[in-house]
Length: 239
Image 1: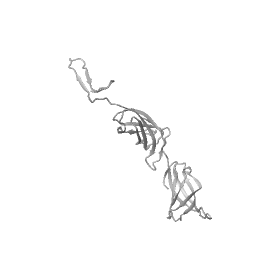
Image 2: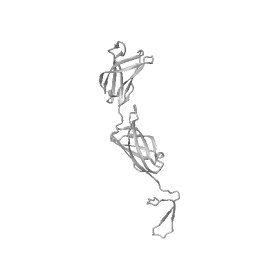
Image 3: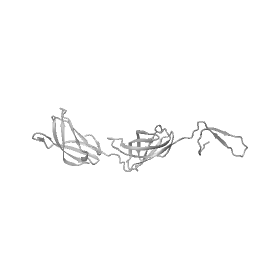
Image 4: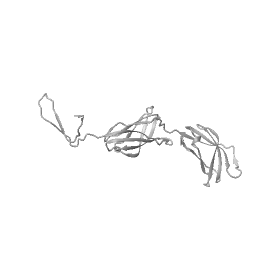
């Protein structure tokens, strides 16, 4: 039995000398998920003693290590002859999905040509996550992914939207659609719609910038004249 994510069924793979046919399997589970006298049907058709059946997710509602034990195997047809007193055992883990309760995403404005930094808040545990997101607005781009590593123990962390995805100025919408663990079974929380609106701002157009300064007398201020394609506005000039 392979490890599973919480909310998923587990698949029991059978092997041995069972002939093709329909069987009733009686089993117990213990550990993180404890129930006894459970049953499932298994239809073997491969001719080599192999087959499978599911353990429903409703029987696996707790995270942690679970022990599975087959107690009886019986035919479903005829006289329902069976073999009892078995103890065929396997163990598997039920892994947690990311805790996206209260998840928030905040994106401050960015300049054209710069990455945008997304700050996450909420209840995510420390760890590394794959974030799936869509962009809308002036930089519409679906089905993007990024990696976020959380280490602060308060549910906060960041990830980057690369500048290559933000090639137009104006309002852009971020929508996180899924958060997945990057270890184990890559358990995920899907169907999300968490995000923020942010702007991509133009840089000053200095393509034709010119500067001139007239001669002046000592002790007087110099006036610098600018020319070019700068739009009307207030600018900070470093010199």
